[in-house]
Amino acid sequence: MPSHNLAHIKIDDLEIVGYSVAAEETVVAMPRLDVCFDIGKAPDQVISINNVLLTHGHMDHAAGIAYYLSHRNFCGQSPGTILAPQNLLGPIREVIDAWTRLDGSQIPANLIGVKPGDEYQIKPNLFTRVFPTKHSKGSVGYTVIEKRKKIKPEYAKLSGPQIVELKNQGIEIDYPLEIPIVTYLGDTQYVDFSQLKYVVDSKILIAECTFYETEHSERAEAGRHMHINEFAELIEKLQNEHIIVTHTTQRTPMRDIRRILKEALSPEKYEKVILLMASRPR
Image 1 (cartoon, rainbow, N blue to C red):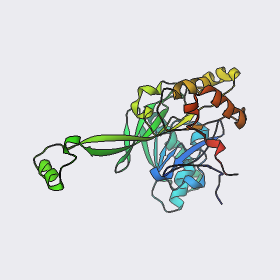
Image 2: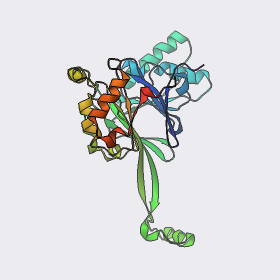
Image 3: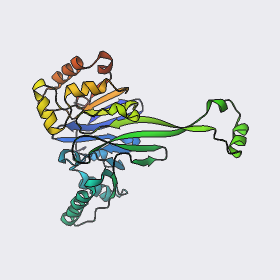
Image 4: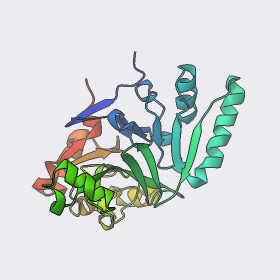
């Protein structure tokens, strides 16, 4: 029996599964891409995913690290890869070492420290790019990008042998093409992410909006989270086809969150919004 009742969202051929409630737990996985953004309490349903992209070290996002790694080892799987802000690698190793002593078994792990501007290859044509966020020390977000090569227009109608001949002559007949698939902001205060083209153009944006009531704006600032007013300002600058809202608060009922989002966003943007926690099977 699964350990969690996770939300399920299907966008074209991509499935998003997860759970995200402020101060409780956040984990968002995309199995086809083989990535899990944050790990929460390590639900059973995400253990087989090979890459955890950790945004920051807060307990509700990172508590399951040791269990994720240990359970993969128990099931005979390869060590999981955890990308995390560089400043967290030491504390993560300490956590793993402590659990190794408690459990009595070695917990293998592939830990990779990242900083803004880094890229990491997930699959042959699939990469994640790291960018800074504004939440805790070293916190980051991730964009998953497919990289292809596209033939230049002037060579598009040539035959196979003609293309081979050009290549033999050392002529560059194609150019690199980047397709941003999904961006995950993690927890963050407002940042003008419209300055990052790969964020603007991501097909899917997974973004926190924690606070919705007018009187909660100071809470948002104190916790370095996004308030609906900031969220609306950000979303209007981006071009994403789908916007998945995470990190909702239990302080505001889901029906009120829907209403406030509808009032704050343009009709065009609101039509693109999916509330993660409203997508759980009942």
